Image (tube, rainbow, N blue to C red; front, side, top):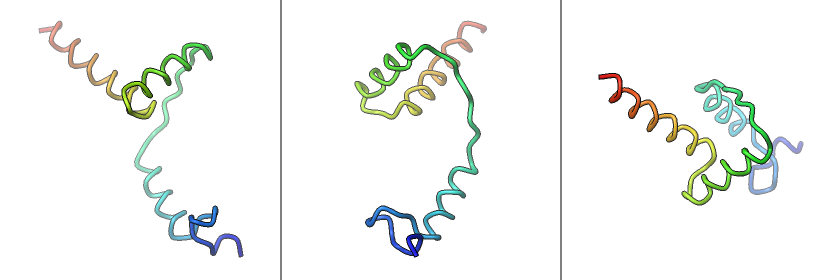
Length: 73
């Protein structure tokens, strides 16, 4: 019965669960190991830039790859 409530009541509907699964299935996970202190630094930097940690990491990767491609030419 709890699955029938919508997300405003703290549980997910079956439709929302299916939508979430479709969204998640578009991505792969990459594991990165770092110290807890480093993770805190990364999270803080992302917050300072008003973005999620994932968005910050992806932006950092994009910027580095772009810079690296200019060096190799």
